[in-house]
Length: 287
Image (cartoon, rainbow, N blue to C red; front, side, top):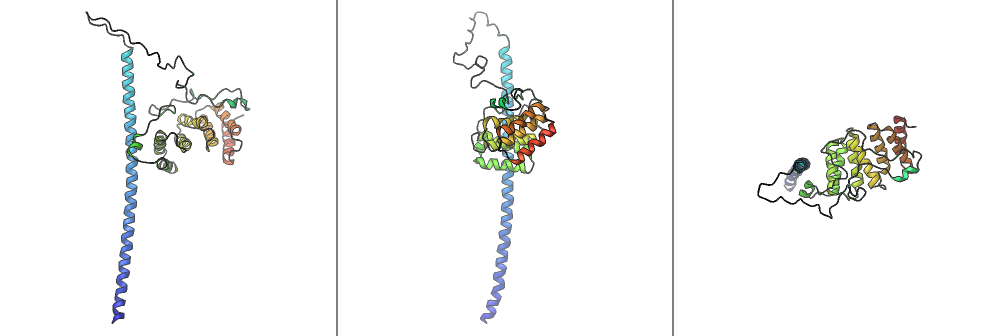
């Protein structure tokens, strides 16, 4: 009798275990779907925040232009019977970039000069690397590398770490979603400009431009690595990419000078970089 009861109980327990396994698997699938939806919503939120920021910048720019045109108009004469208003005097401690063009804070052309030590290389005499007149100017919405970078609204609204933002943006690079990658890396650099991943983020931001044939913006980012992060791990790669971007802009001489600079600044560059330099030198028909 006891044996019969035990035999009947075994199938019931096995059935319960199978049901529990099915339910667990179903819950795991639902959890994965919810996680994907949350990630998508976070990305959409960041995208909308970026669009709002661009809109606000555009409005501010238009208002400043309108204010400047008004200030440039002839001052209206005061009504009869009222004394004329005294002219506004410029503050004595105000910074004037026209009077101090070489001081810190004065505007400079992006990518104006590559390091002075390049003058001693085999390509000396060609002058400093200047991409200010190369190619077409970037779109109005593009961020200038010298523009002040405040905290991102999206990063402030969400407690996302620098590594999380970087990983999401890099995942877009791996999926060849370069427009989304650009947005992610720009958000990273705005929110964490001094993070240890900033040089890599700058490189991949340039790569996201390069892959969409936006060579000028790409060159600005690759040049920024050579200027601001000369000892970065991607220094040699960035110089190679800078030459490729310059060649894409039609600046063959500057591209060839940049390829030659790779060997000067990075004599121990990886074999892949050296082969890439040789390949691009042949493609550009460098002397």
